[in-house]
Length: 133
Image (cartoon, one colour):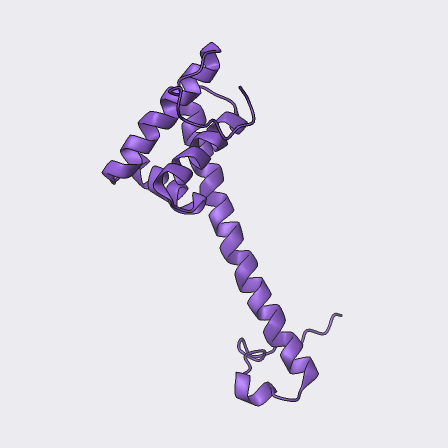
């Protein structure tokens, strides 16, 4: 027979004032902050993966190209990648993209299709940022 100890759900909740001078309590607070940060990162990663899948279906391409397209959009919009991915997912669900993101998407798709055809869609004065000619 196994013995199970039931702890109150909030037994680890510690106030910052109460942990001053207590190394173990400070470790718990630091670990909780790290867990919250990792949970936010994981949530962002999931929406990025979802948006990549949508791009792969709509613009038949591989995963790397889909992620590059989203990254390109994020750079053009000066927005974080998870935010662009969330906007793409929301657009799939009926929420319109902002004009800036629509323009960035069109530009990124042109670039993707030009790379797929093996030609360069950039103007002569635009830097590539990809290390290529």
